[in-house]
Length: 584
Ligand code: ATP
Image (cartoon, rainbow, N blue to C red; front, side, top):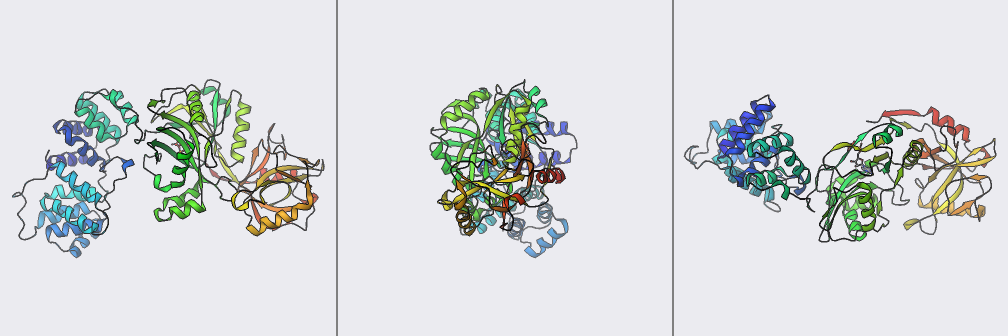
């Protein structure tokens, strides 16, 4: 097909305001295309050269594009830049100068061989592949060879495409409608194939060549469209939607990862199907060590953890991984771990049609948990109170809530159905003050903290019972010197078992006589079945806990344990804390 014909169709698509007309225009375009060029046409329309996970980028900014136009037309860069300043659209600049001027000595447009779609596509692919020294010059000369032969209208679309501003507004679903009509294939079958293999260029070619859609299979190396969750805000509603029984999983607050293992190599894809392996080399390596099969497709959440305590950190900490040159340092400073919650494929076997409960069993068979790769924590519940308790536990430990899933559901690629329901809080609150807590137990440290305590079990005091009730396990905020000091300070108070005045559901590695008081701040005070402070005061079976607790650096040696923050004060703080934001 001549590139000019594609451009005419694009102009018509851009001009229409009706989706039905858009589909019609696409149908007639697809019918005219040869099978070996239809994928290129689709990619061009989508504004990309390849599907997102291949990460093919043109690497052409406005300036470079203008250099190419200048080289093709002889119009000075300064002139082009001033035109660009006025219109703000490189496409318009290219169109104008191509219609006005031609570099002297070049054949006038019309005397040259017109551009073919495949030629334009292949040249653009070369532009994307140019790398290393001299890449910029090579990109300019490849692009100028296109502009030199392009009509003004063609030049406009090439320029817009290369700077990533084609923006035709043609969505994948519109293309699927048009392809199904153009090639007489069942739309649902096409959609199903697209969920398994979300590369519309490749699928278009498949149907254009008259091949059957049933041949499209889940393939390691090609990410599937992820299954998504609906949302409800009460455990009873969730249970009734799921038929009375639910697999409830912690909802980790990190980045979703679809992990493909193929011949010993691991690739990690984002929720938007981009290859993000480069951001998580440590996770990829850990997966190789933890998973014992040749080929697999797994799903999980990558979560940032505190390198010293292993505590989970909020999602924002993963942002350090997004800056390419900083990945190695970020992996050191902000290690990440993986919590796996699904498996879709193992060694040639497509598991997406199997019930979730079976997939979870298969997942635990192939994963040997390490200190970096875990199986997402889950339970099977049929009572709303149990779900709620698990929810509070999850939130107090830094999770966003739960994802509740139907145990019998298949993996519905690309669907946001009622088989997965997220259970998050309606609002988040903010702890308004620091508290002074008594250290009643400790946990041995790992890594840098080996030989010392890595985290402490901290409690509030209740004068009415003269007992200490736990509110958090705190490991953050301690410097190396603090850890040494804490260790030494606590030695005289070691007891062989939990002190009789301490009420705890957690088992510490070491117990102390309540004596040392430290100041702690957290993100918020939440309900938690893991802690005993104000147990049952707000809800049966749950106490109060501090989420993301941190030592402020202040030792309250001036305070006796009986002068620490009281349980009643904790309850008051819980009730008075600020609602900071309505969670979406
Ligand atoms: P959505 O993904 O539903 O469009 P969103 O991007 O706002 O919404 P969330 O509201 O955070 O995401 O909820 C879904 C996300 O939760 C998943 O995409 C996944 O990244 C994350 N998640 C964490 N733990 C789990 C789990 N156990 N099962 C499924 N998803 C989980």
